[in-house]
Amino acid sequence: MNASFGETLLASSIALLALMTLAGLVFAAFGYVKAKRQRGYYADLHKSLEVGQRVQFSGGLIGELVRVGGETCDVRLKSGAVAEVSRFAIQGIEA
Image (cartoon, one colour):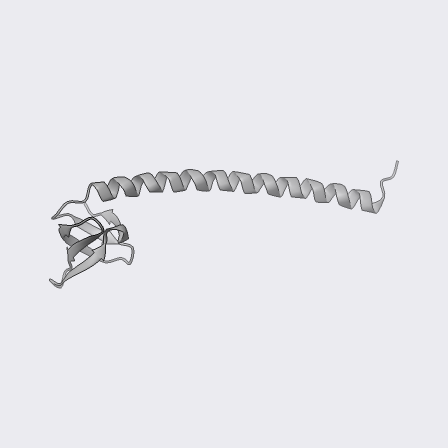
């Protein structure tokens, strides 16, 4: 039996759609797991902030915490200037 061109095209399209859907679900699952892990990391990070720690911000600045508040922190930069920043801009604690 010879399948017509239309039937072959339809079968190929359905198979491709199924593969693309499967790939999308796999990427979504990995993205969800990664996002959940990052939320846990940042929650722990923001709970452990203490005065005197060296921290790095999302913009690449590094400074020392001089005050930790509920929404903001005061940070002393290398130049000696003290800047008020959102505590959620802190990306990491320097060792």
